[in-house]
Image (cartoon, rainbow, N blue to C red; front, side, top):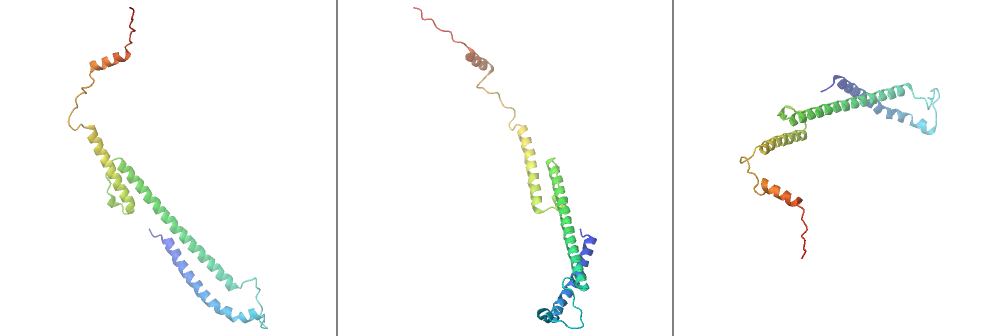
Length: 178
């Protein structure tokens, strides 16, 4: 997903960087030419002295070009970061959609989704296996394995009533009147 604007910004930034690098390579020599005057304080007669706080026109232009280069580099980095973020959001949306499909019991061919990472594919495979196992367990639990079971022999209907009577029976006191 290469953006033509981003590539043109990158190429113009590259050429601008090369120009600034060439200019910066030449400037140290110019500083050496003026080093004697700067250290001793001697001035050549006939040459106007530049103001120390006022940079020359070439220096202003170089500073402006350098700032423009920095701005274009910064904007290209921001554009690249935003593009990566958009790709990540797209991948997460696909991942969530596939998870929903799997939870609904649909089969999903993960090989078709090349934009997913290996970890995401492994998670989806595990989720498909879990859903498959759940469905199999539901089928086996609902159908009896050996047919209908017999009723419990320990407590029949009559025995149950007798147990309830025994619990609610009130003992009568015995008179020992002799």
